[in-house]
Amino acid sequence: MSDIPPSHPRYLSLITRENLVKAAHEGIVAYEGLTSHGRGEAFDYLLGEKTSPSALAAERLAARVLLAAKHPVLSINGNTAALAANEIADLQKSSGAEVEVNLFHRSEERLLKVTKVLEDAGCVLNKGKVERCVPLPHDRGLCDPAGIGSADVVLVPLEDGDRCEALVGMGKIVITVDLNPIDRTSKTATLPIVDEVRRALPNIAAECRNLKETAVEMPVIDNRAILKAVIRDMQEYLEHALD
Ligand code: PTJ
Image (cartoon, protein in one colour):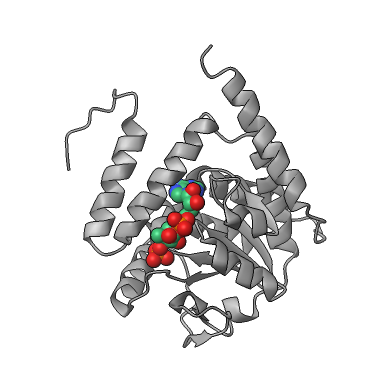
């Protein structure tokens, strides 16, 4: 690892990149995931690298959705595990959701490695035999029929649009976390959260804890209203970005 001084103004970003590169060398993150991260970082600049008011509202709504769900599952890929294993474990505790690994670039070896990262952080994983439960001509369609296959709500951070659309097409409520508000993922999700995954998951977990003793009903969700509010927050930030 290079010797990045904590005083560097981009310390967190640089350390995160180094950790992802290391995770890619170890086979946890797909090499393609490094470019996905770069795309995410670029959009995060446009949001001032902070949770916008509209993203926070979407995160609070996501907590309601997870608590009102009959069978919620957090679907985790290599990038999300490498970035936020502890946050996933905490969200599992606060929401009661199941956790299942689902990989775009799937191999048995990567599955075992991502599983270990999550279990080391305290996650309890669905490990049932997978079947092609999601109609996709690709390994992303493989999932545990008793897990994602029969979930009513699925949280899919850092996902691609195809899988999001296929899950919505199966009648599931799909919550996404993606910094790009005009990605097909955000546009096809039931509830798009446009925020950095390490900011989004703790905000959802905190709201789950706030609501824990309350009887929560499934809220009405308006994808376009959420995305328009995020884009307004982005525009507002950019108006003053050079001040
Ligand atoms: O581990 P695997 O094999 O399942 O592969 C995972 C990746 C991420 C490689 C795969 O799902 C993929 O190719 O995803 P995409 O299509 O690149 O989409 C990832 C999305 O996540 C992009 O639209 C980015 O804007 C967004 N993103 C990247 N990093 C973050 C992020 N959003 C929130 N927080 C981030 N840290």
